Image 1 (cartoon, one colour):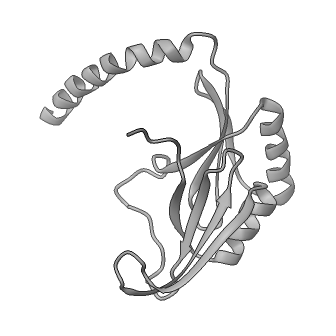
Image 2: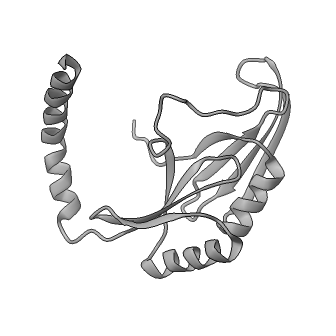
Image 3: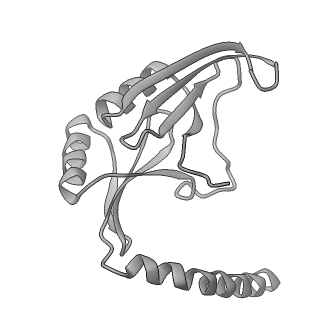
Length: 168
């Protein structure tokens, strides 16, 4: 069996209306689908929710659940804020600059651009506090193939180093 692509990734949001406004007006995604249920289809639990989807160019989606009867949304206090994020690929430096200009005009704080060697990224938060990254590729010919070849070595070295750090 082959996994073909990402269908959707789902997060919780604090306000469906603000989320729709942000992902359509600020990021330009298509608001493509919504599902309202009082019961969770997979478990049968009573859990009123709205599940909203935003489609990207390749047909995959970012989705959100608003669950108003639950306690306020939070984030894992044991995970640094920069770790959990959603990286969205854009086509060019020019597109990234257009987003920077839009963010400035709308008063949206952002970090970057940050040069990761193979991509250039900017970082910002959506209305629910999810960290997002807009990134475009800057890799040179053969660079990603070399990274793939080196990945097993990096994992082995990481595991050795991690073992040493845990002993300290």
